Length: 358
Ligand code: PHE
Image 1 (tube, rainbow, N blue to C red):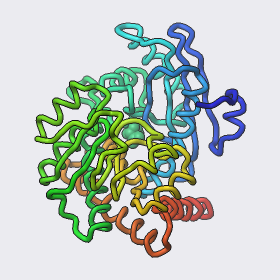
Image 2: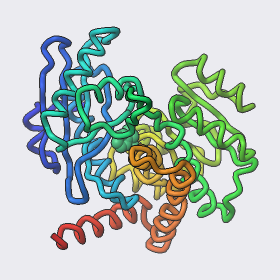
Image 3: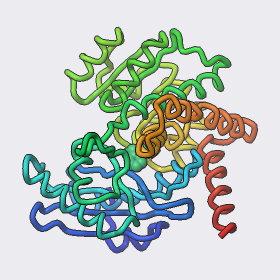
Image 4: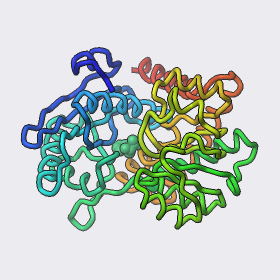
């Protein structure tokens, strides 16, 4: 958690700008972090959750916006990095939640497309449909018989994670076969739950963990897998660890404990300290698939659905995550470096090339 003040956090950030609004009626803070617009308009989800202090929400927005810059560039899509946070100081329900979302929507409309939003942790497709009553600048909302309907990116993100896991497994073990591989999913919510089903259908042995014990039990039962207690996740042997909950789960405390050969999951910002933790994983011989490549399926789907692309084309595009990631893993192996560095080089090259074209 940051100890810096808001203005210090913004001053030290490498992004473009941050839009800040204190929403007096709800007591929430709106943070819209615009990281980079080289490839297109800053676009990324809206996270709505409780934070101990508004500074924590601001930092989350800035880190996640940066991640979006990498995500779009990593999958060659013409959008820029942006993310928003509605930082709550108390839970909002019912009409109060709706009204807050509507005010957030009006702020987006006032920004005239400088930022496009979509679903993220703590927001739902229904929330997106509410925001879309006030603004055009929401990805993944489609018109259905005159009313607005938002799609859930979770199952698409899960398809992309499956592609990412295949690439990681085939690179590391020499075959993309998932049968009898043991895969531990941390967090079986919007992405982890459909992922568990996809993996089970491939014959993988699925271990699931969730802070909600009922949810963990339910998913484990439906995929014939088993439950791992949240405090045992980092010490449980498996072939591949798939973080699909919150960020910063790979850090100085957890990495030395891991008993897996690979990490590939959906959570954003899995490394607590990007540089250091990528090195720690590499030094332990654990193959780390960069989160923003693995979890790009939802972003791809939201954009393509908005353009009314047919389902099979969307799935085919998401499936390309496998090739993109395999190339990155191979490059990293040749250079004996963390795949994060290889991915970052790809992104830097792309952004530099795009900037010099202008
Ligand atoms: N929040 C998801 C992500 O980070 C999906 C999303 C992508 C939402 C793009 C809006 C825009 O990938």
